[in-house]
Amino acid sequence: MVITSRKSVVLGALALSVAAGGTNAAWAQEKYPSRPIEMIVTFGPGGGADAMGRKMSQLLEKKLGVPMPVSNVAGASGNAGLTKLLTNPADGYTVATLIALSVAASATGLGTSKPDDFTVIAVTQDSSSMLFVPVDSPFKTIKEFLDHAKANPGKLKVATSGYGTQDDITLKYLASLGYKTTNVPFAKPAERYASPLGKHTDAIYEEPGDVAQFIQGKKLRPLVVFDDQRHESFKDIPTSKELGMSISDLPNFRAIAVPAKTPPDRVKAMAVAIDSVLDSPEWKKFCADTYTCTKKYTQQEAQAHVKQFYETVQKYSKKFK
Image 1 (cartoon, rainbow, N blue to C red):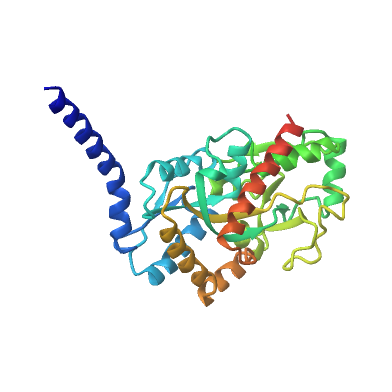
Image 2: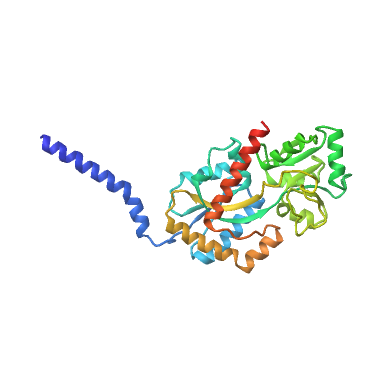
């Protein structure tokens, strides 16, 4: 009876071991991709993340030869969608948008994920943020805006994407210099874009691509770009560096990511496909139209870029507590 019992234990342990490794073994034998890949867009329809995710999905379908349906999973500055990504199997059949806004929210404690939870396959867009006002705003220059903010602390309202984001950090930085404004967060991108036009806010902190239609329609105009160098498409707009400010290290990037435990061969296959998309005429036109063209990152550089941003936000968060 003892021998039989020991046999059962050994066989049971062996069965569990086989079961634990069975999934990975099956993945290794499966041709990838052989079925649809879900693209989780971590924000609702109508915003920049949605536009990027849908365009990338559309072009990747041609490269990978499988459907790539888009699922909008909004909430918690993008972290609701990232939670879904991380709870799905790490098999390469679920990818998601990973953007600076979500990484910033996590770095400031509003989300639980960390850069090491993901394999960042590619940075697909990168853009400096700006401060925009309606074309009929009384503030014609950033100096006029800042002078008014200094003379009237908290009176000027700025539309942002939320607390704990790079938007929020930048406004706190300006306040530390004596330019206090009021942060007015909007969860829905469309409402945020429309708020200064409807006079609900005085300005909006945003990247130019997300409000391109309002720039091109002569409804919004930029006052400053938060960068060391002037934006190629807005060469008459001064930079934060020209104003003596040190707040140019919060790039508004967008990336494509999978769970960290995704098999390397599947990460590589997706990276090759995305790299091909980034070289395509369709993508080059898309990024030009949205002011988001960026240098190409290797997969390792993309991972390091996200991690560096996370650490930078943490540094600012501790400073402005």
